Each structure stands twice: as C-alpha cells, then as structure tokens.
Image (cartoon, rainbow, N blue to C red):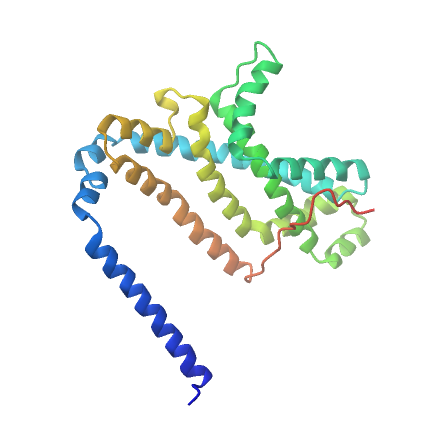
Length: 275
C-alpha cells in the first residue's frame, strides 16, 4: 500500500532523527572526553590569557575591523556611484577594480599593502593600523560596492523623478534622496560584511606585531605556544563570538525593521558595462 505524501514526509523526518541520534551516540561513546577536556578546558591556560585577551586582543580586533569597515564603506560607495555613472570610463575602472579585488584572497592584499607600499615609496613606513585599514577596506570595498549598487538601484525611480522635478541637481538628488534610502535598504547586508571583516582582521598577524598590537588570533597563537594547550584557541573563538553573534542578531533586526526587503548582490561579471 502506497504511503500518502504526509506519511512519507513523517517517515523521512523519522529517519533523519534516527541518523542524528545514532551519530550523537557514536560520538559520545567513542570520543576521548578526558583528553578533550585536558586540551580545551585548561583553567590555568585560560586564566593566564586574562585580562590581556580583552584589553589587547579584543580591543585591537574591534579597532582593526572598524577602521577597515569605515574605509570600505566610503570606497564601496564611490565605486558603486562610478558603476552607475553615465561616464563609460568610470564604469570600466570600477568594474575592473571590483572584479580584481573580489578575486584575490584578503591575505594577499594585506601582504601586498604591508610590503609593496614601502617598496614603491622608499622611506614610507605604514603604521600597522593604517596598513590594515587600507588592506581590509580595499577588499571590503570591492564587495560592498556591489551591495551599494544593488541598494541604489532598488530606490524607486519615482523618488528620483520627484527630486528632479523640484529642481534638484543629480548630485543633490543622490546625496539627499537616493543614498539615504539606499543605506536603509542595505544595512542588513552591510552588517554581514562587518562580520566578515571581523574575521578577516585575524590576518593581521602576518604583518608582524608588537604585544600591544596583537589581535585575538595572534594573542591566542602566542598563548597556545606558551601553555601548550588548545584552550587559548577556545578562548579566542569565544571572544570572536562576543563580537559576531550580536552583529548577526543586529542584521536580522535591521532586516525586520526594513520590512524584510532583501537585495540581490549582483554576481554577474563586473566587466559587463552598460552602454
């Protein structure tokens, strides 16, 4: 006798639950919980990281992220306006930039900024905060540019026409009408970009650091070598979650406040330039 669609769905869910329970039981009885506790729950190693992991690691992670995000927002908005410009050269330059830096790992950009600029301009020594602001902003700006572009295009054309009918110039229309409305639309995806930059800030360790410049990953790595325990990795991970989980809730809250309106981030090649 053939099962109804509802019965098949119930059986399918039951099989899924059974598999999940089986996996949990196997892990619970085969894992060496004693060694796991020794590796990740070392009270001495965890205590030895405080208060430095908060006053140095967490603080610097927030600073690096804020600097990179601020620069990325400005750069992304400029690139988005260039992509929508009536001047073809601006559209082409913005498209090339976006595709180039979206295709590169953030690590390569950080290393390039930290080493290439001093090589290109002898005598110029970039402060680590400046280097990370530029590197994270360059990468983040390339992604945020497409988010901005989608947000700008999502603003109803009637708003632009109304502003122009009141005698506002194109610049004033963009500044006072289009961009503020676009920001309201793109706040949730911008918050997600902030989360990604928070994690990318961990790559700062490849530029070398003094103790006062350690971010969470660097602080955890040094503590890992010092205590010969994996507990510092767990502590650093929890500190990252202290930043990212509230941001995730903020993103969902902003999405609800904007009526759940989502914008699509254009994934078509940036080299596609409108005539």
